[in-house]
Structure formats: C-alpha cells, structure tokens
Image 1 (cartoon, rainbow, N blue to C red):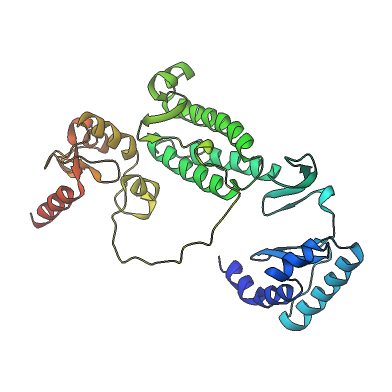
Image 2 (cartoon, rainbow, N blue to C red):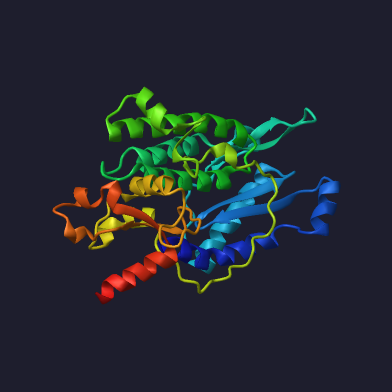
Length: 327
C-alpha cells in the first residue's frame, strides 16, 4: 500500500513542527524536575497522538488549533474534527492497538499504564482463525501451523511492551491451542481425542517437535527498546521452502497441495538425513523429492505416496533436478 508512504512524506513537516514545541535532552529533564510542562508526540503513518505533561486543557486546545492551521497552510490537509479529541489519561484511550490508562504502580501511586487493547485481542483471534481454520481443505496441517506461528510471533513482538502482555499471552495461548485443535479435527474428520493422540506434544499442537504452533508466552515482555539496527540488504539468493510453495501454489503451474505434512512424515522416516549424501538436515535445509516424476503416475495421489517421497538436502535436490532437466 502506498498510502502509509505518502503519509510519511507529507507529515514529516508535522513531525518537525511538534518537535519544536517540546524540550528534549537535559532541557526536558530540567523542566520535569521543576514540575514544568512539556510536549511529546508519537506518529505512525497517519495515526498520531500528542502527549502533554503537567499541562492544562486550555493549552492543549491552543496547540490543537495551531496544528490545524499548520496542516492547512504547510501540508494542504484538513484536521478531522470528528477524529480529533482531547482527553485525560485517567479517562483512558486507544492508540495503535494499545490502551493507555491510569493504573497503580509498584510504589502504590497512580501511573500511566500501557495495555493491550480489547480490539487487538479480538483481532488476533480472528487472524488465527483465518490462518488455521478457514483454509482450503487440501492445505496441510504443517503449513497452517507455520503460518499461524508467524502471526503469533509478529503480534507478540509488537505488544510485548504492554504491562499486561504476560496475562494476555497466557489467555491467548489457551485459545490458540483450541483453534488449532478444532482446525485439525475438521480437516482430518477426527475426534478431539484422536487429534490429541496424533498431534498433541505436551501442551502444544504440532506434527513434530520442530514444527509446533508457537506460543505467545515464548516472547518475553520487554519495556525497553534500543535503536533498531540499520537495514543491510543481502544479495544471497534463497530457495522457496516447501511450505512457501504450498501457500503460494496458485501462483505456479505446478500445484503442490498437501506437501507440507508429507515432507514431515518423510523427514521423520528418514531420521532427518539426506538420502543422497546422508548429511543431517532440517525442514529448512531439505526438500521432499519425488523419486519417480509425477507424470509417471496416473494421478497426483499415487505420485505423492510416501514410498515415492525421499528427503534430499538442498545440494542433492539441485543436482537431481539438473540431471532430470538434461534427460
């Protein structure tokens, strides 16, 4: 989407305008020690919020009018009166999925608390349902678990700064477990007890110890963030993983539905070793290879029988593919 990029370009002027309204560094610390007011702001694309410390509503209204005039004159934008409001932290408000409100600190005094918002909790449960349950029936369980795990890790790393992250993570892990269990029961047409016998690994759901549904609690809560590392574009090429092939199979002529689970069965059977060179491999460093080409069989089901699947490392798979192309 290009709209966030355009918002950053246009509203860069607003960043500098709001920056000039506050005091920073040692000057900010001096004002805090003397109980004087200060201004801070946070912006993500076109969502932004201005924070006042030790100030009055009248000053907030005055700055709001200054921002409205600045956006009109310098950026050619109109400040939405319906979406702009002035509130106090004791009344609470939502911003970028977080809920900011007054809570009780460790010293027993009221302090601002940043918590996971209710909408964010509802949205992650909906996204887990989309990643695990509402998928084509031929899509393998391992691919669903990989996709849902990515959703869980991304959400957890975003919200791990919230004060109630640990409590919310515990609740969401329970719900994610049952969403995954119901998805497997529906796909395999089996009972919950059968699902647990086949796919329950301790308190997790997975097809193997190396392919389990991630947990929200695996991400530790963190209230401090250092500056991000500079982006270093790499030139190394990488092959699509088997689960990536399956997820995006509609983009390719060769469809490979259901190959994810087959790959794990072959990996376990072959003891996580390449059949070509006997090197130790993992899901990321191996391929599920057809011993006889698919076009040698009457249908795809016969071609994807486990007896016709072998585990090969990336090098052996590339060499075998090159030999077959020459033939």
